[in-house]
Image 1: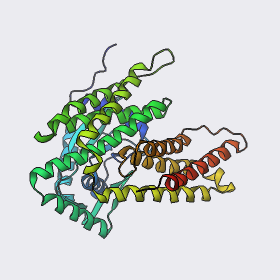
Image 2: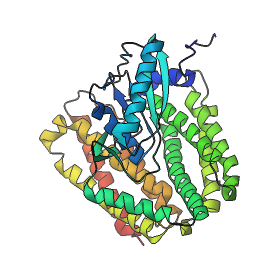
Image 3: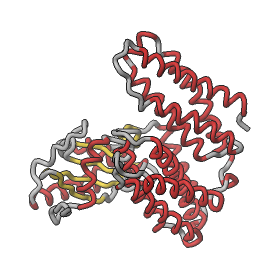
Image 4: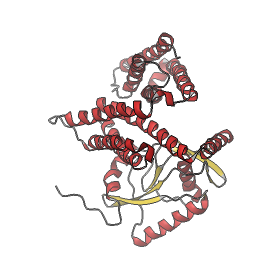
Length: 392
């Protein structure tokens, strides 16, 4: 099979991925713009939000619903003009200034522009004197207390010993990455149907790149983390590019997932044992579980007979969010006790997430009733987990 030919000025990897990125939709790391905004502030606030919160992409030429519209003009002169405009915006409309990377992608003769924004070195970034952060699928103004918290955390980190700061920052990023990798790998085991398979493949590709970035940036004192991180990256590449079919074995996919999970289990005891996490982290984990238990009970209580039919998808989406957070808490495993506690919490989380994948046929509401009842059962299971095992 001949490889698809892309223009020299486009990024081949991004061009191959852009259709799937569009299909997945906007996320914490991705923002769509149908066209280059006429008002500078509409783009500047998104860039400022990413710079404050996390690295991300603003992709111009894709509608909010994922339709690839393409840029109106993308010849050399148009690209140069667009680049100049974005450079000026990032230098003047975003404060402090930020330097993104610009990449073009081409699919079906339509060009889009990805503005790849790094996580900034300053604590907070502003547009029109308003501080912004990225939350879920959009940028929003920061509350005064959030600005203070960001600045205090930044100042604390910047006044530490530089060597300690480099190591602690790396370990913090590593801990966050391992949670993301663990949750994604476990979901890849069980979610094999569209749209989940497409979403998971895209996530796997992103995690492969992230693993290699971590490996490349490991401080000298932690350079031995690079090899297992490369192993995780190679395994996620297999997950990202494997196409399962009825007549094809899933063995390579399952083997890659097992490699990810086994390697995580090797990394954590050596570089991220539970002792390195402070009391603040332990308290946060306990509070997260108790808060989700209350939220889940409230969701079940709100799912009245009338709302079951009007708000089914909203109920599923909200429940899935709680399940995802529980899965991440279980993955970290901090202040949860032994393996039995962790596995039972993970089982509850996965059962809640499974509800999102169910088909709800037109059967007079019987399937919806079962879904609500099962959600209620998992809410009760979480309450029992808290009471039975207790949180230390």
